[in-house]
Image 1 (spheres, rainbow, N blue to C red):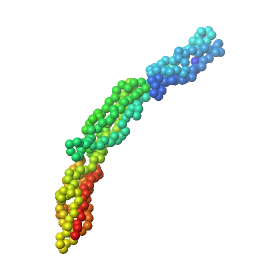
Image 2: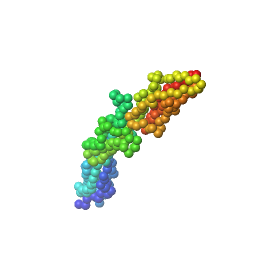
Image 3: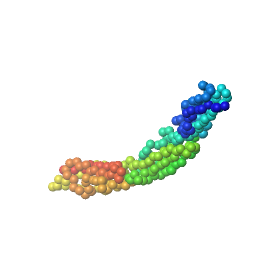
Length: 264
């Protein structure tokens, strides 16, 4: 009437799913058995190794039976959990996402902001994506700012049924690549270039013009802007290039040039 003795019954275990799957292929070593009368007790189980387990708790039972039908039992549990977070699978926009300021058709320079769009990322999961949250939507008007503190931080979070999560995070940086604009890049004669004649007894000729008026979608950097000649200055005999150079605060530049030729 003495049952067999089971040795080395596996311990309870908690395991994650196989990568990309909602299951886990798991293997274990079956216990061994001794008996006082039967040299080779028969060991049976409700589940044999290896086995593909679904998510959840599974009970594996071993029975050792001797030739007198005496039975010994041991068991262990396999707890399969989904520990794999969702994946945005390469759909998260690159960071920083640089977007140039908007242009306008009704004036020669554009806006101080950019209408920012991006492809909305999508997520996949080995089990099921239950929710995606987001902090911003495509189509926002984001203003240009030299400080990175004002870049737009966009975050998407994907959750699965087990509460695992994955983040898609990227910065939207509005950049100014638009050159400044001259409203009037002409001298007062109405021609691009000017020819002057010296007066009797002098080797120069004075010339005045209207200084060019400029604009920019952001701001002209007056400290960097310059001109090599001023209206009303005397021009020596020969050809002089008049160069008005303007920069904006982003470092974009434009120039307004004409030549003054003085003839004796």
